[in-house]
Amino acid sequence: MTDKETLLVQKAYEEVDKYKEQVDTDPYRLNYHLMPPVGLLNDPNGLVQYKGTYHVFYQWNPFDTAHGAKFWGHYSSRNMIHWREEPIALAPSEWYERNGCYSGSGVEWEGKLYLFYTGNVKLDDGTRETYQCVAVSRDGIHFEKKGPIIKLPEGYTAHFRDPKVWWKNGRWYMVIGAQTVNGNGAVVLFSSDDLQSWRESGQIAGEGMNGLADFGYMWECPDLIRLDGKDVLLVSPQGLDPSGHFYNNLFQSGYFVGTLDYESAQFKHGPFTELDRGFDFYAPQTFVDDKGRTILYAWMGITDENESSHPTLLNRWVHALTIPRELRLHGDKVYQRPIYELSLLRKERVEYQNVELAGKATQFNGVVGKSVELLLDSLKVKNGGFRIRFRSEAELFYDSDKPEISLIRKNFKTGEPERRTCAISDLTQLRIYMDHSSLEIFVNEGEEVFTARYFPKMEDETIVFYGKASFCLVKWDLDRLKIQRYKS
Ligand code: FRU
Image (cartoon, rainbow, N blue to C red; front, side):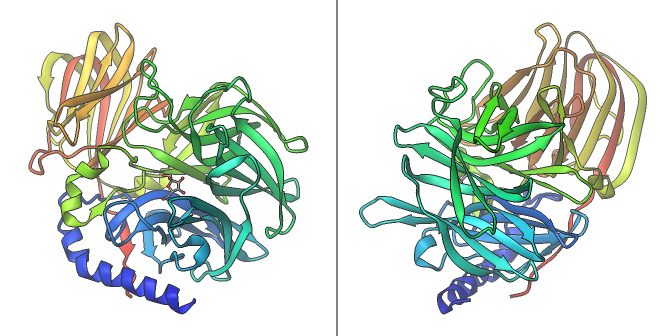
């Protein structure tokens, strides 16, 4: 580490020491989600299983609850339930990253762990520079920066970032999120034999391709994965206009399913599909583990006007990652399911078989709580609709006449109800993860997912069911993740 880096890291831990007790008193701290020790967290980065251990890095501003010069925070785990907070992996100390070690990915090669990330530089005249950089580790904990490996190619603005690297057919590949000089989002493919020297293969998606003339002004955090014999490009476009039930958050995250010809760098793909239908989901990233699962984490937040109104800001922290979800492809649709390890968090179980809801507001003995998994199986909704109200603060509503499903919560700034909706032809199952201030709702085995933060009154633990429906109901209380804190 350079002296500058050592100093920055030291300052970050001074901030952690100063505020960690206050952060821990916050009633909205989550039980089973990864959060920053203090300050702001955004994208998951560098997801990888390295020598058997899972590593989750994240964009972190330890000094403020707003965006700034990002560090890479770091957690590691053998089972994604028991975690260790590891020392800061990257601090923005060098000239090529002085305004942030921005998002990127991790891969193992010849026993070493390589992190690829974007060095973000803002010049005094207001312009930006961007460098794709690499750092290497022999133990997965301490990283040596090797500096920039890719400079900005022709045809793109300095909004060129978030390298995601993978291995295919004996070579390394990388996708980078980009903005073309015409002001349109795009994804650019590179390849390498040694992770050090990279060749630009060309733009594979975005501006002008596959009929996408005008589809956002910048595409962030691309990720090219293989599911069920197809290539799936995950990407987070900025600047899509709302259209009916689609694109109602400020920025989106979704995917294109198709086939990438690695030789000619041609990606033929279908339409864009949103990955999440709730309010707080952005910059997802995946990795493949040694069981062959493709696992996704996302930022359970988004850069929008709500960000500055989170009540947790008062206690010096903001945002968290989603729970880990396994991805599968059904036809051309990505399904997300909570990984099975999360069942290790289950404590007390309450079950009600063959419930017949006849229209009245109903509560079930023992079906209450702040940190809960709810399963509604063999669900049949009769005409009209069906609603679940969570702690008097948010509501899931299935309108079987339309048929569509909505999540309604209060806007953090105005307190007014706001709604996200999507079509669901037949509602048969709901799996709902409630944490102290979050909801993750998996509809029909993960066909659709609603992810949202919400801030109920702490004493309110009610879960109320309304409407006409029949189902089997199981509720588990969920334990905390075990996290071993890092001692500076
Ligand atoms: C997405 C993003 C990335 C960038 C990072 C900076 O949320 O804007 O494009 O690398 O966050 O923190």
